[in-house]
Image 1 (cartoon, rainbow, N blue to C red):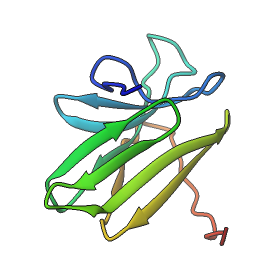
Image 2: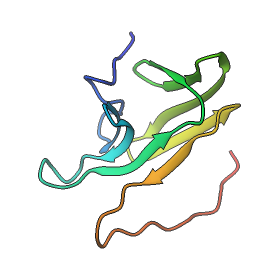
Image 3: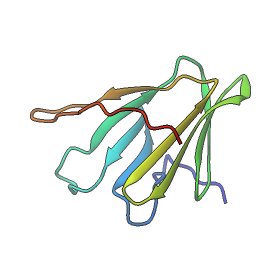
Image 4: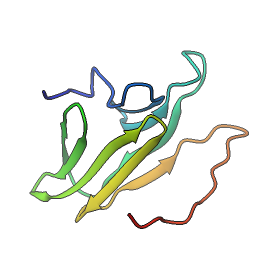
Amino acid sequence: MKININSIPFSRYGSYFVISDFDEGLLLRDVHGGDESPSELFRLSFDEEVVLDCDETKLTIHKKTDRNAKVEFIYPTDSTVHIKTSGLALKLDAEKVRYDSFNSMEKKQL
């Protein structure tokens, strides 16, 4: 079943992480804090024009001119997001607010 993330954010049962498509672009958000809490974690951006393909288990973002160039998002557990890129660069811009902090982590080979 295809999912339109303009109306239903991509997520997993029990997870507070969602990927939403708004007028200002794609956002990776944390919806744990409720309506009054800022939820934007990262703005997702690409150097190429892209097309979204989403179903119940995976969000795939394809390069518009080459469907083999893509970024895939899955939620293997309710507390993790896996991102796999192949031929398409993904940029994560932190949407920070006061007192937020992000720490870099070493890349793990799967």
